[in-house]
Length: 436
Ligand SMILES: [Zn+2]
Image (cartoon, rainbow, N blue to C red; front, side, top):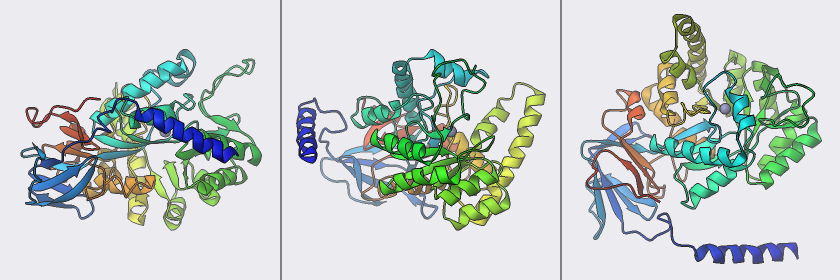
């Protein structure tokens, strides 16, 4: 009975959606062709000269040199530019727009309505997309509850501009840990940055709740300054996620936190900043992804306000780079994630790619970390991350050579998502943005 009612309801909802005016995403379009001087094939690491990319509706139908232009197709000629797949950020927080002060997290949590948080999310999503990041894995709404689900769906419907999103909703952490820290114990029901649990049953319940409310993946905190959730608490979360065909991302900075998360069966380790060699070897052995999130330190060093801060950040960065270099040497699957959570940082996601390269990844590997390998982590490798027939027509273009200088990714000049031009500073006459 219940099942029958749900199906009936779905049909009703689908029917009313069909009556809505068509968004640019759903309107039938004539084929489009993108031409440029070069295309970086991220799988082989080789440039394809004078590529012709044929796009039908929102996906690529053919890619190659000298392909004939289909009749009636609209041609976008990007001149001397180099085309790459739309970039992917594997660790971001589009619902977090913290003020740039030490108490930023708490102010974000206690002074803003959920409505403002969601609208800020739309602004952050737009900045991220304009920077060339056409897909993101959002790993926690930081107190904005399920606004990430709403943002994901609004983007899908073409109501707001933003990247394709996989969302984790609230995240799950241990009672007594995570932000906001240092609150008075007298406060009744203060807001929290994550859903706080104790025990395997509460863990399972939180997982089921979040999955039920639309999470594409779950995020857990295996440590917070020190190991927190136990393996027994993390296991049911992983079990519930995997049963639903979803993955689990674990915040784990310490080696013990990493070992616990791996014992529970998680799919990715976020940060891993204090991982020792044995922990990195275990990550490799279990085929788990590592998202090192070191670009923030690279950017902070560049913008250090004084010599003391510069020295501190430089030292920190040296040790982080060593860890990433070792992980790469051991063959760990590294994914780019900038961990943006402030107005200052959304849209600066390519800093992570630059940081990974400076840590010792060859340029093509750093670019893969933000394209083909990131798509694998997201489980979207059939849809994004490379420029091949069948994939979404998500592509970007830069003026220079991204293999000679990965900072080219910080100067993206053209962005297309699903065959629609989002931004075009290369041939403004030939293709103005297709605004929603
Ligand atoms: Zn984060």
